[in-house]
Structures are given as C-alpha cells and as structure tokens.
Length: 184
Image (cartoon, rainbow, N blue to C red; front, side, top):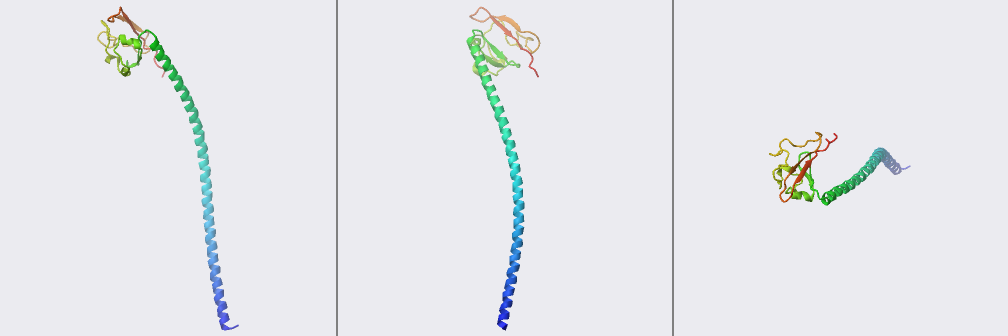
C-alpha cells in the first residue's frame, strides 16, 4: 500500500474512533436522560395516585355537604312555614301579644298590641323599657317604678298577671310567662 493510502486509512480509522467515542457518549447521555425521565414518570404516577385519592375524598366530602345542605334547606322551609304560621296566628287573633326574649327585648308582636304599646316593626330587638305605652296606673316594665321586683325569670314558677287601665277601654289584662329554662 502506498503511503498516501496508509495515511488515508489512518485518518479514516481516527474518524471512525472519534465517531465511535461520540456515539458511545451520546448513548450514555441518552441512557441517563431515559433513567431521569423514568424516575420523573414514576413521581408523576405517584402524584397522580395521590391526586386521585384526594379527588375521591373531596367527592365524598361534597356528597356529605350536599346531604347536609339538603337537610338544612328542609329545616329552613319548615322554620319558614312555622314562622308564617305564628305570624298568621298573631295577626288573626283579636288579642294583643308581645313576645320578649330573656333580656326583655321585643322579639315580635301582634297588631292588636298597638292599642297598648307604641310599637313599630323597627322596635324588634329593643328593650321593653324603651317602649312607651298607653297604660294608666300601671308600669308594665318589670323593673319600672310600678313593677319593681316583678321581672320574670325562666324556671321560677308560673306566669305573672295583673290588670291595668287603658284609655278608651274598660280594662286590660297583662300576663307574662317566662317559660321553662332552655335545655343546655
């Protein structure tokens, strides 16, 4: 073989060796990248399983909340109907009713009570001691000058009653019953 052919053969062998080394390095890099991608894929699969588990828990919680919400809506309808019944009863009777809470604040009242107390719808929540009245010779306020010591308290016995004069009327009967103590 000629010297030029030997040199050409040596150059080709070097190029082949260089290409082989580059190919080997590229294969190693690809194998490393593949291993990293497989590890990332396994992490994503684990995260996906956790998300699916969380999603199932959220769906279960959502179903429970839906059930509770349905029960609350049913109770709201029931309370609304009861409230309407009480309002209709108070409006239909020819008796003046004034309902107070445990702090003697106005909760509700019937239209007929306006003949005795100067009440407006905006008075709901106000203490009875802040409401003026038409009663003569009587202070309907349990802690007022004519009613000292007569404040009703829950669970202390029966109702209190008495009489008072109302202008343009013969007589008015007032009564209160604090009712039983609420269960705690």
